[in-house]
Image 1 (cartoon, rainbow, N blue to C red):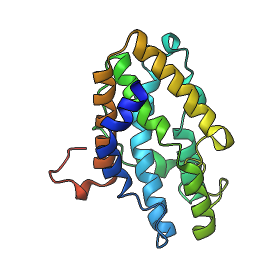
Image 2 (cartoon, rainbow, N blue to C red):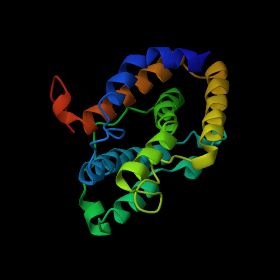
Image 3 (cartoon, rainbow, N blue to C red):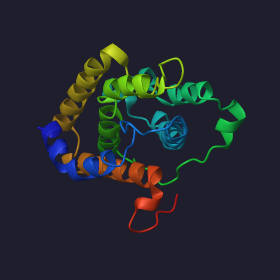
Image 4 (cartoon, rainbow, N blue to C red):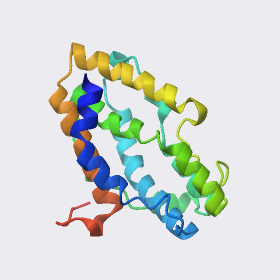
Length: 198
């Protein structure tokens, strides 16, 4: 089953990214959190612009407009004190996953949608440690709120069905790993063994 293969094949890159994220660090400052939201915005904004322009959504029977995450990041940054002009000037990542097939799109979405699953834990921590709520800067990490698991299961069903019918498991896995790697290199450029052009 593709979901089981994906979990196994992406374990190393998933762990490499997750272990560096400071969002549950008890010493996380409001300034550090603001910086990380800015970095996530710099990755998601260009990536989701690219995703929304792809031609396979009708074939998938999947409305990504309902899952669009960039507006939540924008709201969080505005709540944290940025202005629309500041958002427009924020750096954008150019080293994004290569998506030329439906299989590659599914691999990228596996990472993007899967990243919502830990949001409830992060949201509770931010509220207790920094006093940041959904209204004051953590709507992005809250994912889909109470329906996050339902949304993940719906995506998993779509992924499984398409993988069985038309898609390449190897392409899905390769792009999932590429998504983890490009996100890690954007969020933590100084931790990379070799410089990555962004």
